[in-house]
Length: 165
Image 1: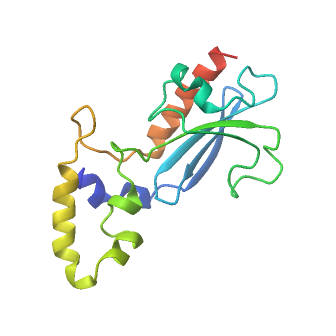
Image 2: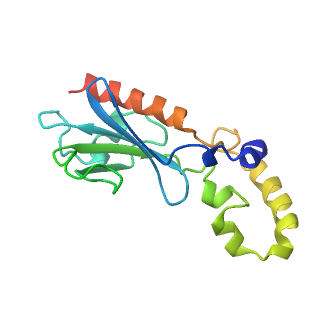
Image 3: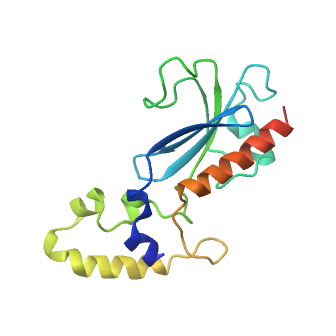
């Protein structure tokens, strides 16, 4: 985990990606904490059209579970009007087992505001030591979920939603 924070892969990744997989619109979007979120859109006629994610979360296996459902323009970066008739399901990568750039990166703007410059070296060392000891539920260390990880999870979500249509 320390290496991931030091390498800061989120700095070279895009903040927003749109693509289509097997006929389903898909979106990867970076939230305000710097973590990636994945979304799959459904069209009218799908069995889960306008179904709240909490009603189906037990039947869907995606990173951290479903955490979102809504219609239409879910982000300003989406072309206006393009997805007006789309119902979205989404998940995020801001869980206990995830590195959240704005929270975990000692060089993030949030972290810079928290401490003065004189404390930086000491705080970075201590923060990295603490973060490296943070296990998740399975005893593994927290990791940053990359764009390729989120894309794989989106494809997994599409396949499950397609099977249940």
